[in-house]
Image (cartoon, rainbow, N blue to C red; front, side, top):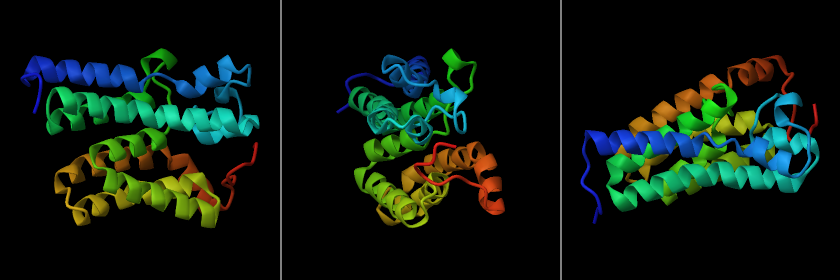
Length: 202
């Protein structure tokens, strides 16, 4: 049962706090704490786990993956515990936007894949697990993180429908569209056969 009553002001606060949680650039924080190269200056220049892996430090990449996913999940879970599912979806959307457009980095953030998966897991774990499984399967077969992200994001919409969570379809579609938009350069490289595979430093 919700702890707080929802209202315009409360929902606005949910959006702001969700955004601020999502905007924490863990890829930059983790690499700086470990004395590694700034991910914005290597590889794709992205702050996500795949590019952090190009530092050669798998632990840093794993930490970035878990923290980026965790911030989306935590935003959703707290909003749901205090309010309701509508607030949880709003918090998730705001956290995703925070990751992609973080105020601390001049609104130049990551591509949102780990945060997207964390949001899906927190909103409906069966949908989230299906998205995770899709990402892992495509990544294992093709060795392209970007392709895995695109397929998993697109699949989240039918997964939400078939797994009994149709109320998530609009959010899933919106976030998936942003994932595709953030991967537009990757899509061009995939089409040209120039996209680096998982684990390559360049």
